[in-house]
Image (cartoon, rainbow, N blue to C red):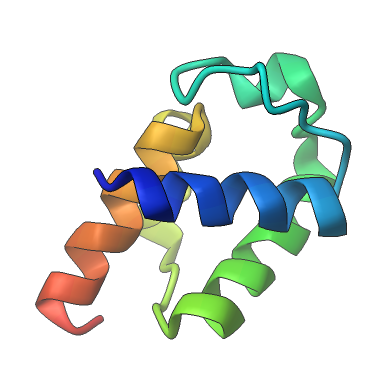
Length: 83
């Protein structure tokens, strides 16, 4: 998990989906902050376009999208694997 990627994710969510205050930790539950099913689908499209990764049905686990750090981990792994 990189701090830079978490910073980028926070900015992306804040600018494109819903307000995400800078004081919210990387481990905070995004579902309680406003990540509902519609925002999740929009986030997936943003991640695929912004980071060139493919989010597959098997990736759609609540845990993968539970926090900025979990999303960062998933993206990092996908980039390493080239998927």
